Amino acid sequence: MIEYAIEAAINSEIFDHIVVSTDDLEIKKLALQAGAKVPFLRPAELADDYTPTVPVILHAIQKCRALGWDAMDVCCIYPCNPFLLSANLLLGYSLLKDHPAKYVFPVSEFASPIQLAIERDESGLSRPFYPENELKRTQDLKPAYHDAGQFYWASAKTWKFNPKIHLNSMTLAIPRSRVIDIDTTEDWILAEKLYKIFINE
Image 1 (cartoon, rainbow, N blue to C red):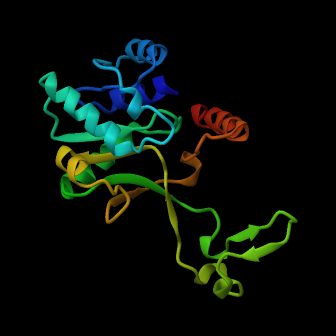
Image 2: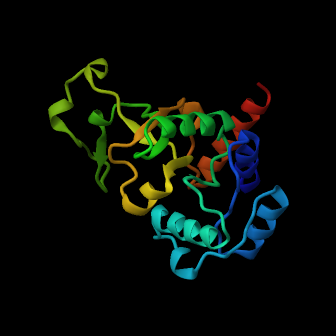
């Protein structure tokens, strides 16, 4: 999947440098083989399961500047998205040029209205999260979107001074079929099946 993300970035032909931030030597080796650069290793304090995205990107920007790569615009690409399209990276960059003071990222519509979400207790009993919407029709509810978890474009200045990626940012709507968050074995199996469909298109 790391190689796929790097390939998508290379094929977009929009980047001066494609840099992988990692603390793992095996990932570094794979990234170099795929055509990316790994001129530094990420420090341990930025490599745990709780580190937000913005500090990682700021660290990478600072390290790249020390090498003489003074990027004006920076795109953070997540590695675990096997349906990332080079064309969407280009569309995202185009949006950034029109809105230079904002983040730009892809979103996808929730399959079901979030206003009709149901919680379930330990015994299996259900209860609406939003009781006031329980009797409303789906078509009368406002569509809701979620972060596709693929990439974030922003100027280096925005990365430095705005830690809130999702607030008042520009979004690029992409189909649900092109979005999957791989957290479980079931997610992985679904991703494999979808990938087989896409490579045969």
